[in-house]
Length: 248
Image 1 (cartoon, rainbow, N blue to C red):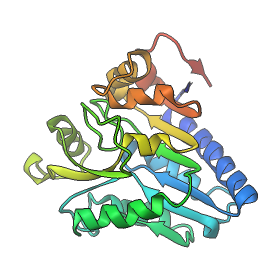
Image 2: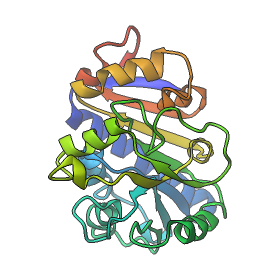
Image 3: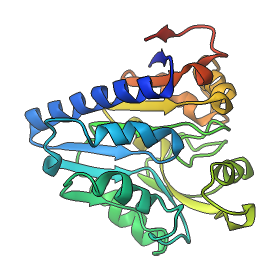
């Protein structure tokens, strides 16, 4: 794991897009395809905007998965991560193969179908964020660090539901679903490269616990400390509690 701190979210997003696009191009050059996992959430907005504008990527050779989805939310709902993928990625680039989670379908069937596709070949790069309670995807504390299942059905912690409300995805806490499909911790770690982005003061405490504390299921994203090719990109606000980090 390596931590890099940027002066502001814009500088972070620009560098992250360059970093990710280089890995995607390299995978396509070497194996004629790139398999990526995209994250959702507000921390990803500027990064994805720049990534889909990156030059010289053969997007038709890219296969796309995403980390999670609310159960009971249709793909047309404003908070749907399926919709997020379509509006922020698929609308802009011609990705031929994409495997989107549909929260309105039977969760078991969705997990079986998308999980089978996920297992067909390694993921070249996974994009993630971290939650205010240290969650990774929708793996809330205490997270399951042992299951090999590619996707899980999980109950959402109250802190996670409040975060989704505060980010403006829902109009009331009661509207926030109580369960979700999430990519498992071990499946995320199987990615050859992981790019984790966290921005803003509200992530600072979680950042410190995740990246300077002990690896623990009680701080799910702390598991990224064990991944040799995990890049943690932070802005100054998210990083200000850290005792050590490289500045870009």
